[in-house]
Length: 332
Image (tube, rainbow, N blue to C red; front, side):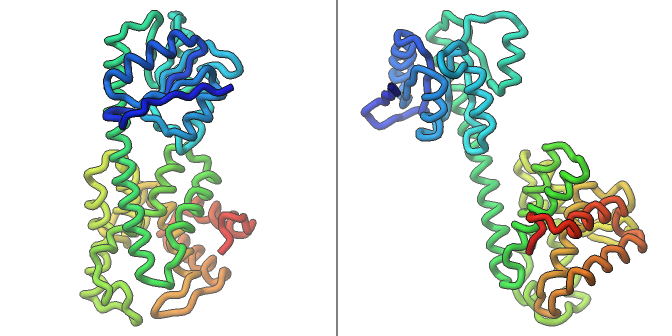
């Protein structure tokens, strides 16, 4: 039977989840942390801890390593595998002192360790520190969410581009996966797919939605959006790997792109991937000044760009294999 307890009064601190099969330890930790104004939820094992984490979304989790039904290590692995819970800091409380045990905890995703017997001051200080860290992560998440919402707002200004960001993210990740890129790059491609055109927030509708071709002056203005977009994301260190995508997705290997006229290997490889996917999606979508191309026409255009030295042959061929295979992620 689940054991869930929480403070009745409104919390002035963190929401802390405690998982320990020893009722005395649970009660001691609860009293110590409740005295600091924390809202405390306690459970007796790993199974209940996972359910409580999903329900209560705690700011910090204290978890005993040796518990029935599900160990603290297994709980940590499962928690960190769930995107909605993965950023919750987990403190493993253990009597084990061997380095190999600590390594297994780190591999499971633990953020901190407390050794038994736990000193009350260390417990309270560790929870306060991790709560501050969680607050900073939440602020970062909120800032990224605001930028993504801004990107989707830009897309909504033009009904012809509806779904563009979502397709860009899915297609770029599919191509990155086909190329064998590591998860950190796939994550950057996913976020870059949504944020690559965020700089268009600074482009007037008269230019962005113009039904005819742009004048030379309007084209110069439009080509400022990569720099504007990079500037918008400059203050977020978590977007450091996404900013080159935003700035350079219109660069081309022959130096004909913008805004910096980069050539060859100077064009970031993730920006090259986004650039290829962006061109394909743009060509196969209706625009104010033209109808959508057929898949065959868009494919031919990409082949032509390879022959002109603007796109990587390896990347284009890998992408076209996905298109030809008609994978679900590339369905329009």
